[in-house]
Length: 458
Image 1 (tube, rainbow, N blue to C red):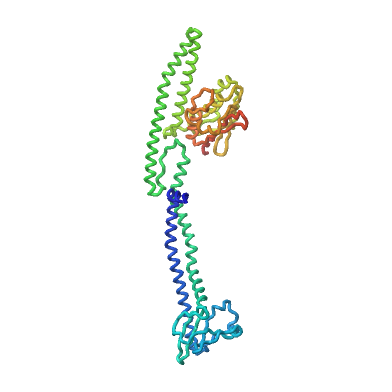
Image 2: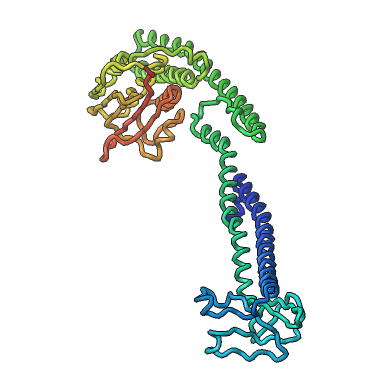
């Protein structure tokens, strides 16, 4: 019951269907009852008229007032449904014996019955009788059992009500289907919102929604615009801050390089080394911040800069840039690629995508390990796989590592936690799909990153 109440309070479709169904029932049930009793009384009136007609036929043709026996009529399907015709006498007729009932069916009727239509109980059985006096002074009675008449009348009433009984559930089902169909644009709109990426702030379409829902859609669109403006402000701040910090960090790096070239004592050189490493990490962080800000920018101006990009050329460039670090860590990089593949995108996005994937794989693979990079084409899309022999990422952490600045606990590698976040943003911009999984079923599990990007329509 609690579930029913909760659904009634939450679901507009359920509420409309329920109330419309109740209205249909409230109108159909009285109509059905009225039709049933109307048909019932009409059938009884018709049977009363039949008794009058039988009496008129007997009197007008001067027929013998006797009930036809079985020899004359043959076997009847329902013996109780026959009509009795007899003359009333001052002394009631004796009840018929079983042997005599084959030739005569007489009722013990009182001679004093009034003329006209009436219901009389004979031997505890109700009969409907029509009594009429003849011109010669005789009194004629034509009758039929009330139970038979009521059964016929009930059947007639039920046949009248039967269309109501069939149409009511059909009408309720049609009403539910109509309500569901009318509310389908709202459900379709919710499905469209669910399929959107968290960076997609386009306004919702208002053309194919009911007028009653349009004000709500307008409010949501205004909210989306405010959120988009706020996000753009944050991205501009991030890009401006990173850009402004680049110059002083570059100056500090140059000063550190100049200082390293001077004649310093061993203690001073030992203190200078961590400074230079910290400056290099800060520069790498700023570069990634700028890349992240650019990858999250989905403005129209960015979409107009899409050009054909050779995936193999970008792949060779990225692998060459990663070779020094891989050789220093004695990591073998294997590349497996199909024939020439061309994507329609910004070349800087494809470079950042592959560079971050390969850089992460090389950094988190232990010395002596291997990294495999595969590029395969499938109908309508290209699949990019980067697989390493590192510790991997547990299933519970795979959503979190896509957030900016999040790093798996226990990792001893240098990094900012922005690599996979940048990859996620670029894949979303390219309308692709990103998946993380274990590379192997045994430890060390390794990490396998699968990216599927749509190919341009030819």
